[in-house]
Length: 597
Image (cartoon, rainbow, N blue to C red; front, side, top):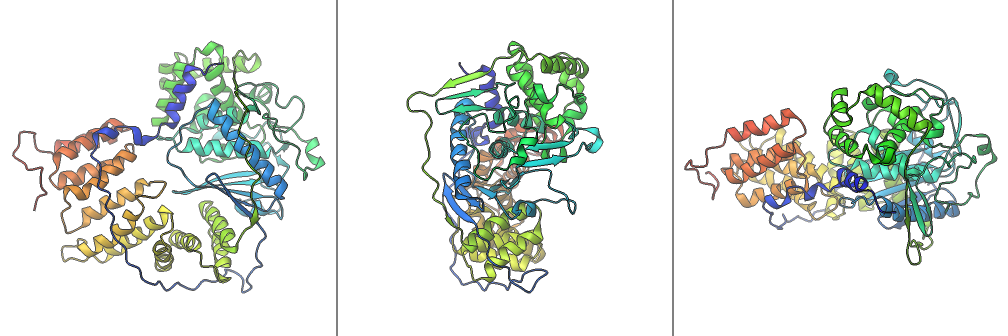
């Protein structure tokens, strides 16, 4: 079956790399680098909090595959099985839903299979079980996906969420944990989270639910089919490639599987659309969706109706709604503009769709030998440095700083001096507000030339803060030496992946405080940043303003026009228009070939 025209359009909407937008209109930058000096760094001392006893090393297994780092304390069999199916899932996803990813972002999978290690990553009342079994933890230059392989079922109570926006009210009870689907969900959420501009929570969840229900065999993919999952009481993923884990317990037989929306919402009162659309991606409602929650299944139903239901008559309206929702909050007036009907009328139609689902799904046949079957994962014992770094980074991203400190400190105190571990320690100390200690660790990692952009960015931020506090000139500006010291680590990131808008923004801030007026070739690096991040309004504005301040009004006008075009709200558009209004008229006798003295 051919791909629907809307699905392809929706893919472009949610996944088009921002580097392709307006790229041809901005001049390229030179490729020269700022040289670095090689000096020894004296590292600070580290202690373990709340204990004088160094904990014993933890036994974890480690592997790298296709851009992923895997840290697991589950059995090798279970780890290999999950990763094998995940590799095939990614192939199936690329066929059925061809998301075009942006620059590669390192992904770490932390698989917690015993000793309740997942509990360390979540807050919960004393004596209570966590009501979730997976986490997506995001940093600027990497993400961590944490899966609780130990928990086979989750017990939930029927508790209303904030403001009545949604509830975990598919009925209190115990729900099967499908580890494959949880991994797929978190991976898809990661892909969707990189959309620029960001997607609203309901759209992310609806698309994730559809992807989770994707069925794939060695020779075919079925996308968008509903109604069969859960009827047999099985928690195995629809793909059919997974087998029962050797660690599976009998308790899951008494629990309820994850259901498609037509089964989960049969006896549920639907949420009013104003409350449904108001849920934010970082809210507890959007983060805790295990157990057939009303909000998540309604997101599934609404997105499925618009993509596959009613002969496709809502596809165009849905595309428009998704675009407008990505630019700001939805209102009933916006909804009416898109669909031609009120919230209440669409809610009635959605109820009818749930009760009698009229839709067409997609099926894709795999030619030849089918999906690529990955080789067996090459697992080995993880080093102290790998365990400390990976867990420390994840804890920091989860805002659990005491746990991050102890995971990193334990490895350091055992004598580990791996530069990647030192970089992670530096990032932790920066987050904890320990600038002097952070600077030592970050400097040591940077001098080892590790590949991690945030290490260099945080080092430069600390140097920038120091220069602001103690400017090198009587005018309160940075001296040339201060500026070079700040720019050196920032320029070191330009050949690393992923590129960071924050790097280019700090370059602009540094030049704006420097006693030396930048020349056109100096500012070309900011045009490089605008090419990569045309929707990052603050970077675009600073680039235009700095070019104007330096007398390069031609470049300033071009960049400001891009910023106004990409602006997502009237205030941002007005800001760019006000900047352009300060530029001299084109016939004014203003030199743009050289900087002002």
